[in-house]
Image (tube, rainbow, N blue to C red; front, side, top):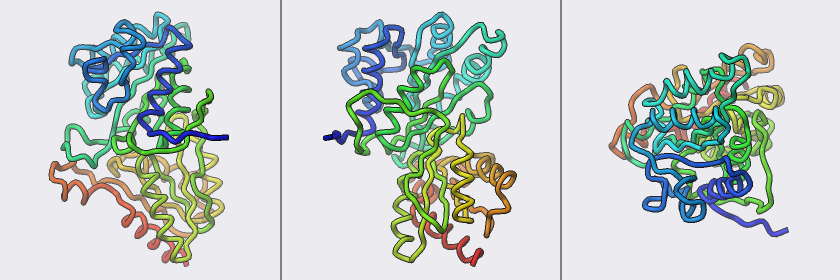
Length: 330
């Protein structure tokens, strides 16, 4: 069967188009997502022409208004997909996200649901400084009631987004800016990827790397380098942080006895910290060396390209982390 290769951006667009065609309650809202701009990263290109401005709604520049309107629409039976232009700007809508969308189902005793998707790009590497380059996915991982998805490939992007749109739970859907142009095989037929199911992107026997979003690709590159040195690396992509597939991660650690966790968010209180804690509580007896974390230092992201490059994890730092724990465990 001939499976087409498309970009991450086009995979997301396909998911939006397919879900909007089959379900009239699905609509989009966000800043500049319509026919005159097509979204900051062009994911919504052409959608306003097909579905009209009632279903592809340009909004005022107010993140709190975007999410507030989306929460209200979701409660009344619609399935809104709200785009926040940069993930950093979710801070302007945290009350609506963390105190309304996340809690309504619980506080109304299950009588109301909030089928809302919040699409937003995270991550650095494009030199747009501290207000537009953060990775804040751990914020949302910390809020009960929110689901958190973070696809690393075009295939995962389409399948997870379709699952998110069909879910009755509010989903924060994290997209890394440097992934939009990444190409991969994406089937044309309808498919979904269940939340809470990690994927082993590369089989290995010596060291487990658990990585998220763009760091999955960096980890796969590191694994190829390490293979030349005789180190077999298994790369596990959680794909969703909430729900989190602990079983796949723990099973991999049991097999390899070594764990490196890689994420672009800040090291303190971040994704790497939570996954490390899980292994410490539930699988520490299987470790032959301490856990190693590779994450961004606790600092704002610089505008300067050399300084930004210095603080974002890269394949060389991942390789070094793996070699350190292999040395400790030998």
